[in-house]
Image (tube, rainbow, N blue to C red; front, side, top):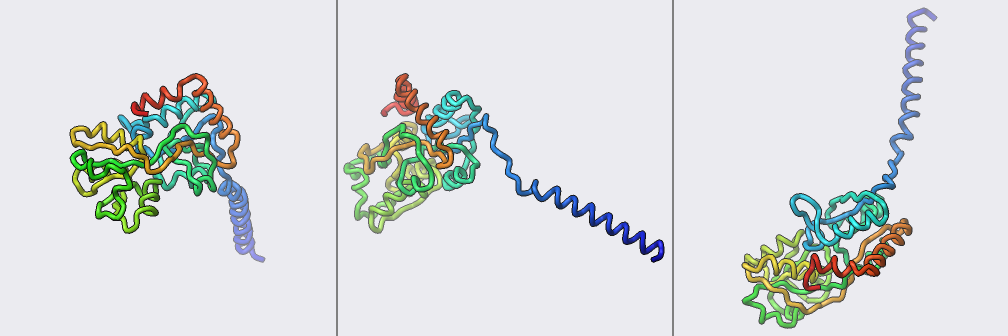
Length: 264
């Protein structure tokens, strides 16, 4: 074997060895998942439902944000709000991208199959927001919409959307991705009524007084709002329930709710 061939083979062997070592060393790193920081409480929110959860001065605000900050102190953790689209909330919880959903979520059976819920903190339900000068047409609440030609606004994939779709045959539904769009459509007479959770409907009626909007305070459904937690995190579920019980014992729960939702 001449010197040139021997040198080429030695170089090739060296390069292959280096490459193999590099691949062996890198492979475990590619599959390794970084564990979440146990000192941080990652709170999933969809900040489009005032007064429960929304953005104010570019910061997450509302009743749920108030609860989250207090829960952080109760669990001795730093709160980090993670903003997500509504449809991404439960998948993010299942994928361990967040620790808890605090985003005005109603307890439903399909959701309970996938996640756990802390004890409810608020009784709610679906009601109507309508134009004040048309209030007399909707005296029976959502049931005024039965077999009518009204165009009904809902927020896509919410309990209100599901209720209208499953209850009113042939309903003319216009779906929105956020509540402010639906309220503006009502003001612009693009829709005749907006179906949404009671706290949010009353909030929009109050802040749009000049536009002459009014809620129809007849609950079509009875729902309970609660915080969503992974089924694989029973410790946090226990802490959340203990926190809620502590708020009740100190008579702070109702006060916090009234601070954000005066009519409750």
